Amino acid sequence: MVSCKRLLKSHRFKRFYDGLEKIYDFRMRGKVKHRLSDCLIVIILATMSGCNIFREFVAFAKRYENRFRKLHLLDNGVPSHDTLERVMHQIKNSDLEKTLMKMIARLIDYPEIVSLDGKYIRATRDSSKESTSACNIVTLYDVITKTPILSRKVAKDQNKKGGEQGAIEFLLKRYHRQHPRKKLIISIDGVGANRSITMLCKKLKYDFVINIKREEFDGLGGIIKDDFLAELQNENYSSRLVKKIIQNQKPKHGRLEKRKFYMIDDLSYIKDRYGKLWKGIKSIGMMRSEVLNVKKNKVTIQDRFFITSDVGIDTFSNVRRKHWNIEAFHYILDNSFKEDRCTLRKGLGAINLNLIRKFIYMIVQLSRKDKSFDESRSENRYLTPQELLYKILYVNSIKTVQ
Image 1 (cartoon, rainbow, N blue to C red):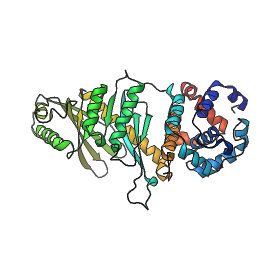
Image 2: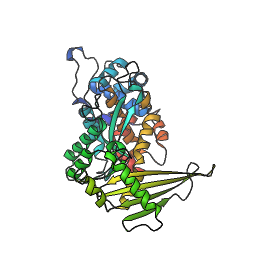
Image 3: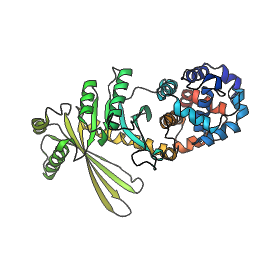
Image 4: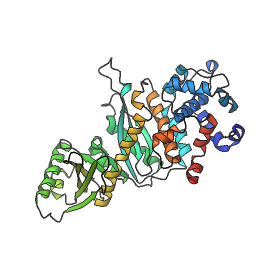
């Protein structure tokens, strides 16, 4: 059992609470009953305990109301679910992200390989209005340590600020401002297939591996695909084609997968036609995935094509294999945190709750042993508020002991 008095005297709790106090409170002072920091702590601890909606947050606070008061919180009782929801609507996501990342920044190393991908929160779409779309949030994700770093909500008018592409450019520029001398390798799916993004990566001196489809890049995708297929038809590959094969030794989920990576560095035929438009491209790559279904004894072949900067085939294969970590992260948000069922579409509520979920994800990820994420999070279900706070504040100590 963690002592409340000991926790209140700790410097980490004071820093955490003072950071939440610095977030701008939009409410009228004379009409405020519950402190903004108290509301945020209730939401953070309830989310870590396994709650996903505002009524569950309130039920969690009522269950441990006496425990909260020992921590000098909730002096005026438990706030209603409408109050918590209104707080999430109005607070600035930049302030909340800055406060939460300060708590976790000391535990995270500078990333080497990052993936950028967007995720829709499906329930935020208003079905009564055909013109509205679901809330889309783009994440800059460290695929090695498996931690989200920065987030950006895509503007409702996607044509006004470039949609996901505009959000990707914003995140890259923001990260470069925070860490101007750090080098990165960027992995992006088809949404990043844009001239402005490749030119931005070249300007910031970031390497990139971008998935490209046949219809994109004004026909360049078709040329890349035809060139690779023509090379593979020859039994003896030309000297400009580099090959690497990675194969799973044991079947996983009833499947045996073999990945073949190919890369071409000689792009003279592309530069003659697209040299002025695509100055950042140094090589093109292909990944052929051959999946054998052990039960059905059936082989499925899928080809993907990429444009890259000056990276070797080993780096190219490693980046593409690591890219799927961000998809696994999105799966956890949907299945463990039930994010797709969140109907909070007003104001900044969706992005603020998304930031809190990512913060809890990092805490659980850093403190768990050889267990799955759901098993590690379910262990928090019956912990008291002070025990949950101790896990958040001393996550590095927990990781060291393990």
